[in-house]
Image (cartoon, rainbow, N blue to C red; front, top):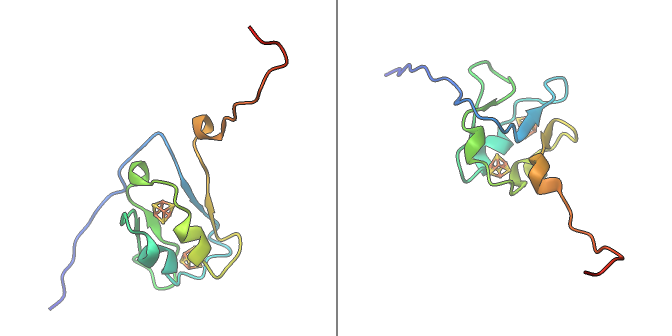
Length: 92
Ligand code: SF4
Ligand code: SF4
């Protein structure tokens, strides 16, 4: 029995996962390893996966580590998470 369904990615202000479709071979290892089920296989054989729920990502990096093709998937942390607190010379 064939089941067909259609879904749309949920829009979000953060875009944690970026694919490079010229490097991705569509093996879906990144999809399988994500414990939050954020990623979904492409509907095309060997296609780049789809980021379905970008707002649910907790930036564990497992998808990037599972990828056999360096550069095919990139994790981009939100700007506020990239901030670093550094000590100042002047003490109040
Ligand atoms: S960083 Fe972690 S939670 Fe986010 S998509 Fe990759 S595996 Fe899933
Ligand atoms: S693990 Fe890498 S090569 Fe495989 S589908 Fe994901 S991004 Fe593409």
